[in-house]
Image 1 (cartoon, each protein chain N blue to C red):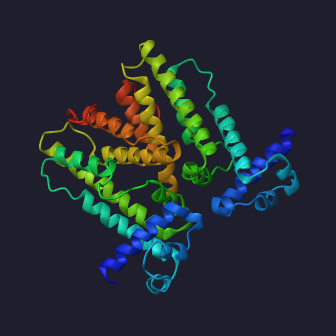
Image 2 (image 1 turned 45 degrees about the vertical axis):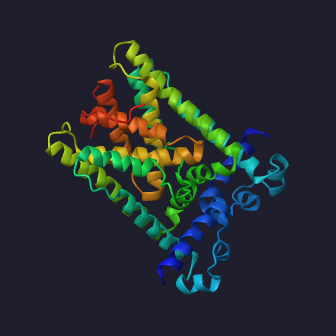
Image 3 (image 1 turned 90 degrees about the vertical axis):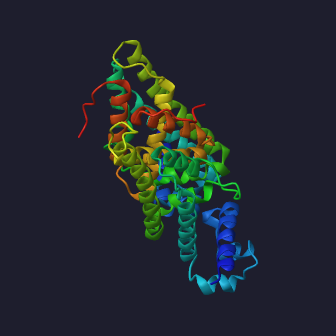
Length: 193
Length: 193
């Protein structure tokens, strides 16, 4: 399948999820959100689950692109990571709801769960590597990089469900995460309000 | 309605949610999980949403009972709070999935959201009060009680979605929360592994 068709299918999946929710999602409704025919969707994906697996892979790739940060400075890398998580991409209208609906379905779909585990490993790895590099270079106080990463990513997961369930601004959590990093790693955040 | 009928209806709602998921939940399927007739369900609740509101109220009440801790010692109160959150009640078989499904539906149902906001206020209040009391009595180091409470409850929310989406043991988060409290409030946890 060419890149443009693929992009159209993924965008349509996202829009259909936003509009109808996971429970009422059908291939027809997804096709209706694009100029791609339902037959073409069925040609590439046997089931709705297969299409949603491809959609999650697509999200992971987009996420990887946003996480890619060339900075060598560990502090800058942590800031870029928090930007990628908490500041929505400018060219996309991102709702946290579709991803949360798919997460709540993970107990019933191993293929979804595998992808969330992969995303989680990647997030923790980015943070742990930056923390480790900062400790080795003497910029950060000593700490267990994996523990710091696990706590930060758990707080990020909390921010996601708080945004969906309570309508809370995720920047509430960003502020607390920055304060935690400052205290734990002994640096002063640039972004304190 | 008498207490026994109410209890039966709430138990049936929980079981039906576990078995069919939110998307496929109907009054008939809920009634099928109890000896209460579908007519009786309809007599008390006009819609599925009303029944689920009552179910969330029921969860909040149960939760309040578990959070009730008579200890005057702030440290003991924080430990009892973490037990109530992380250690499932012995007499109930609690799955984290139904509550997460309802949370992911909150953007579409103001009545659900109101109840989650109420639950969240209560959780943060219990932690903030214990932290404030401990600081005033000189047991804890100085800290902003509301900030500590917000961070702890956000991590608890993160543990909930991690259990559902990744299959992670919530005690991973408990350990990190205890380490954070120890560091932030200057006390040594009894429960460190």
